[in-house]
Image 1 (cartoon, rainbow, N blue to C red):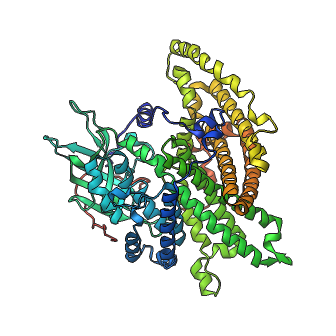
Image 2 (cartoon, rainbow, N blue to C red):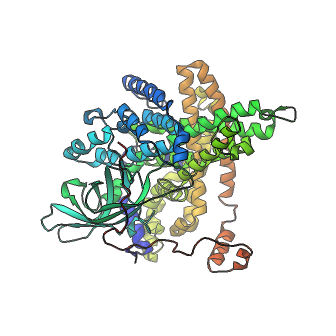
Image 3 (tube, one colour):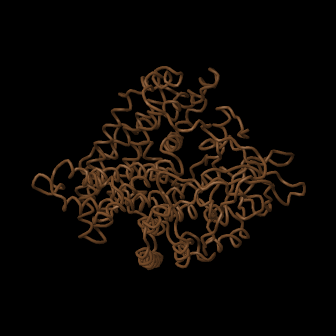
Length: 639
C-alpha cells in the first residue's frame, strides 16, 4: 500500500507558505511591475558581466562549440542514451563545473555564459542540456554552494566539477507540487551521528547515472528538534539504494530519469544541508536561479527554429513564389524571429541580475521559465507547420529519402517537457501570482483569509485602507502618459510608455480582483493566470527594449537590427496584453468551472462512447511499500 501522507488543504498551504521567502530585502523589477511601478532604472543600463570574466567565458564557449560540433544528436535519438564518451568529453572540458566557483575546481562562469553553454550543448540534443542542467542548476552543486558548510563545499563541489553527475530527488509516486504530502523518512540515530532514509523517489532526472544525489526526506519531530522536510547529500552507491526503473518519455530520449528506492540507507549527519526542516526552503531558493536553465535551452531552441524556418521558407516554392513570401507563412517567421530575440533578451537580463547579486530575482526567474517554455513550444510547433509533411517526418526518414535530416518533430517532442519541468505552467502561474500579490496580502491581512472571523476582517479592513489610500492614487498617472518619456529609446519609446501605462492598469485590475473576491481570490486561477501572463509580456517587452538600446551603443549595425526585432516583438506583445486585459473580466471561467464539475461527477459519460480503450487495467498511480527492493539495480555510471 502507498505510504503517502494525508494532509488537509489548510495544512498544505501552511507548508508552502513556510517554505517561501517571506521578505523582500533586495529590489525586484518584476515585483514593482505588478504593483504598477515601472522601475526602468533597475534594469537600464542593464547589469553586465565584468570584462575579464566575460572574456574567460567566451574562450570556454569557443572550446565547447568546437567539441559539440563533433557530436551526433541522432545517435542519442536512435539509441535513447547519451554515449558515455560524449559525457567524458564534456567532463574533460569542465562542462560539469560551469557554475562551480574556481576555488572549488569549477570554471566559475557567469550565469549568462552558463546559459550560453546550455544552448550549445542542447542544440546537439536537448537530452544533453537536461543532463547538464539537472546536474548544475538543481543537483548537488547549487544547493551545496548556497547552503553547504565549508567542509561540504570542499567535499562535494570538486567532485561535481570533475564530472561526478548529480541529481535532485524530491518527487514521489503520489507527491508532485504539494510537498506537504512528502512521505520519505529520515530517522535520526540515537547518538545523532546519522539518519536512516526510507522511501521511493520518482522522475529522478540524472538519477540513473548519478554519483551524488540531493534527497528531500521528512525527519520526525522530537524533543529539542523541529523535524520536517530536510535536505541531504547522499552517495548514490550507498547500500540500500536501488534504481528500479529507467523511465521513457515522449521526448528527451537520452534522459537518465528513473525510479529510485531507498531502504535503510544510512547517511552521515554531516551530509545534511542546513537545519532540519529547511529542505523545502533550500529547494525553492535553489530554483530561484536554477530555473534560468530552461529559458536558456528554450532560447537556444528558438535560434535553431529560426534558421531552419528562414532557409526552408526561401527554398520551398508554392504557387509561383517562395512560401516565405506568402503572408500565412511570413507571419509565422516573424513570430519566431521576434520571439527568439525576446527570449534571449529575457535570459540575458535575468542572468545578469542573478550574477549582480543585488536583486531578488525569484519573480524574474519564474517569469523567464514560464514565458520561455510556453513560447518555445509555440515557436517549434510553428516550425513544424512551416515544414509541412517534412516537419512531421523524422530526421532518419528524411535522410533515407536523400533530404536534409531536420529533426523538427523531435524538437517538438523534446520541447514539450519544459512546460512541466521545474514547475508546470499551472504551478508557475500560482507561484508568480502569490509573489506578485504579496504586498496586497500583507496589507489585507485577515481580509485575505477565507476562514477568518468577521471581527478580524473588520479590523484588517481598517488597516488595509491606510495602505491603499497611499498606493491607489499613484496608479492614476505616470510617465507613460507623456509623449516624450523614455525618448532615449527612440522608436522603442512608445512601447516603454505602453509598458508603464499597462503596469498601472494591471495593478488597478489586480486591486479590483482583491476587493471583489478577497480571501477567495486564490481560487480564481483563471484571473490570476492572466494577471501573471500580462506581467510576463511586459517584462519581456522591457528586456527586448533594454537589450536593443545596449546593442546599439556597443555595435551600431547589430543594434539597429535589434531595434527592428524589438519593435516587431513589442507590436506582437501589445496585442496579447490588450487581449489578456480584456479577458480579465470577459471570459468563460464560470461556465468552464461549472462544466468541469459536472464532468468529474460523471455527467456526459455518453460522450466517451464509440471508441476503444485498449490500455491495460492498472492503477493510475502506482502504490509502493517500504522494504528492500525486489528489482534489478539499473544504476550505472557514465564517467
